[in-house]
Length: 219
Image (cartoon, rainbow, N blue to C red):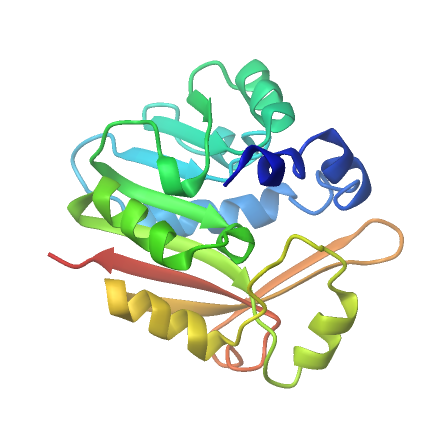
């Protein structure tokens, strides 16, 4: 991203677009993310994990502190807060296209990130270059098709979403670069009163407003 693009994700972005950021990322949601990476992690050693678009480091703080944890975000505001709140992890201000840490990583995550990235080709190539030969890329994206598609379009007020795509698009994108392991439907919404709904489903995954995708590196 250019500096101009990066500047869109500073304090004003979080205070206006995601002013309820902590409520939208409750522990039970982060524990679900943790369960995804724990199932994908290599056994017998502490994995190296990179969280792309880590924001304030909340997800990394949920992981076993023995893991080697790294986070990047284009937001200087977010990275400064993450570094203060989680000193045991390593953070840097960077985008997905220019990961500054040396690989390989056992797991790379990107939760609600790649729909913001202008070049999906560059994003995919960058992730592959930093993954171990059998490493996993786990990402979450909103999807704009199916029964919930019209509602997702209506409720999406984030002007930085540049890829408003279907679940089929994201599954094809992943399968072209990685080996698709699994995908899960997600329903999430902040209700009046501050309660955040986060429901996962396999049975109804073709109808949910978001999906989580688990993909393994292609040798």
